[in-house]
Length: 293
Ligand code: BQF
Image (tube, rainbow, N blue to C red; front, side, top):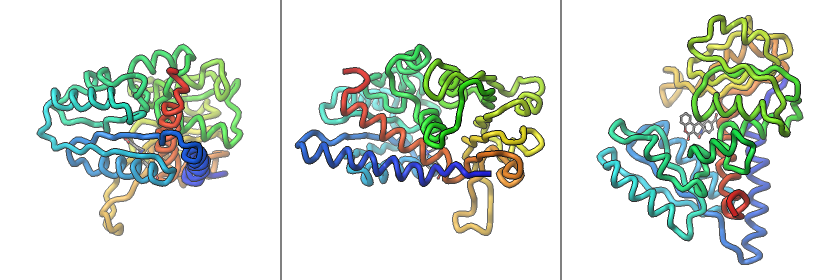
């Protein structure tokens, strides 16, 4: 079994981006600028946003973090989004999810200008993705595609089983891998909580994409010998031996599956870091006006 090392790969990609940024600086061009809006004090969200800001520093991007309390109204958040949409300096921005219950995530996502939607969550970008048009790909699927491509894993003609149908991972992943495109042309089965015999579906997969949010859900007995296992799960489980009091585990039983799979992504250090570099790639594309001119 080989490890799909997302940490290492993301460092390589960040080095490539840093070189591009150095070139832009030398030529006197505008430095790519990512902004992030963080509402409230969800510890996971705080840690994700921190890692995004740190990654911007690492590649030489400008970044702006806008932090607001849980008490912010939907109207006030929409006003911040309007300012970011019209800012001359900000190339792209994200609104960190989840949002407090009194704020409508759909309304917020629809308010983001698709040209600055570097998370790729706006329906315009989703629709363009589904039709194979230039768009910002959602960060996690984009990271997974990069990983598959750079490790030279064939997808054409393979059977992919995606577990989980979220708007930001499972559903776009199933569309991307079945497209007539590089790192596509797979036959995809999208499974979910109502799937009759999930183990039977997973056992037929050459490639499994696990994005369910249940710790160690995919076990060795479910998979085919030699399968490629992509673990998107990031679950916090209590662990008194760690200084934080918890550790991160994926949706895949890593130790068990390692005996049977050809490639496995670890958690942490697999898909997660690739998600963050994808956001940087999208911001670079925005600053170069690659998608929308
Ligand atoms: C790692 C995310 C669920 C809901 C909202 C590195 C990240 C995570 C893990 C990270 C995620 C998950 C992000 C690791 C961003 C990925 O070493 O394994 C980086 O920062 N992520 C997010 O912004 O919102 C989420 C998952």
